[in-house]
Length: 440
Ligand SMILES: Nc1ncnc2c1ncn2[C@@H]1O[C@H](COP(=O)(O)OP(=O)(O)O)[C@@H](O)[C@H]1O
Ligand SMILES: [Mg+2]
View 1 (cartoon, protein in one colour):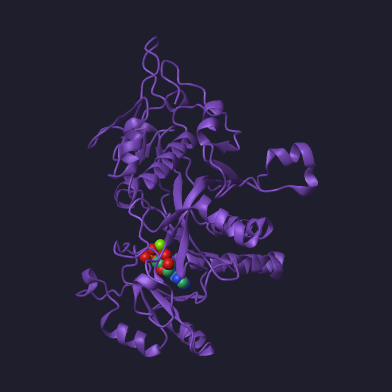
View 2: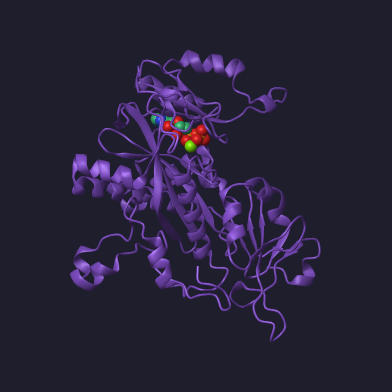
């Protein structure tokens, strides 16, 4: 890191103080956390309501920045950050969150595992559908396509979201037509550059509830890549497509995508909840149908997806103590209860679709801020903070209760996705009140 006087051309942010708090001259005591926020949704409400935090506008100095990825791209390299400063993305987060790069990193990681630990270990990475980047892997894709005649594929632009630019196909002709005139985004039409897509095997047998397909949105917080330190949030939700599933209508987004705007005219649309189920409701439903053992195995497989995908980019992401990242994972279940990784989002939507959704997202963000701990209230050895459980800390993390009562022979992972989230009670026990301020 550059000393201050060498960082003349860089925007200097933050001021080093004990526990991240700016300390004024002796006797004046603690001051505040100066934050900047580039988003106008739930996160803004959470930051505004946080005791002792004040918003900084424009070019003011800040200690904490919940920025969007556009801000990061333009400013990160020009910012000089003091020790305690925190920012909501890693510099090259796209290694995991762009659809083509995620798959590239996972394929490479699987190969390394195969070489170093054998086939069985490598097979633990078989949780993403077969995927090719287009146009660069077009020939490889065609070979694979011909090997599985009649199957359905999905084309997705690598860096767009909310279902934009996605289509399903079963014939090569559909892509050659697309190559001719549809492969560029609106902005790129006049330019020579072609927008990259991934062609991915479509999961043709999704797990259905009331005939509808859904995917899971799960929140994973990474506070360090080296060593890998990551937390799993207990809440999340299942997003349902708004029309019954069928393989006959491959052009209908309302059948095949679970993230397109809900049709408020759908017969079972609930204006209170949208087309969503909270994760607890889903876990209860699956347990009632398949039993505890099966569902525990399923959630263990889902944990495996988080840890392996993060490990696949561990050496690629530029580790930086100033950065943390709240990822939104998209996971799809098939009829055999196998979970598939669809994508990882660097900016999961923080806009709420209902009161219930708003509360969940506020709690998620409050707990994220507790872990980032600008106030210096944690000791650093916590395995749980509010709705978050420490999932990986340079190695697997196990539940205390097992260590105490059962011994080391039957350890279970310290994760509780879709389980009770009694975060308030836990936070009351955990967090020391900030001097001079009310307990949160
Ligand atoms: N390989 C796949 N098989 C089945 N469904 C898929 C597949 N890939 C994507 N989908 C569906 O399409 C939706 C959007 O795809 P996703 O990769 O998340 O792109 P984005 O959210 O950026 O538009 C997913 O939420 C899921 O419902
Ligand atoms: Mg998505």
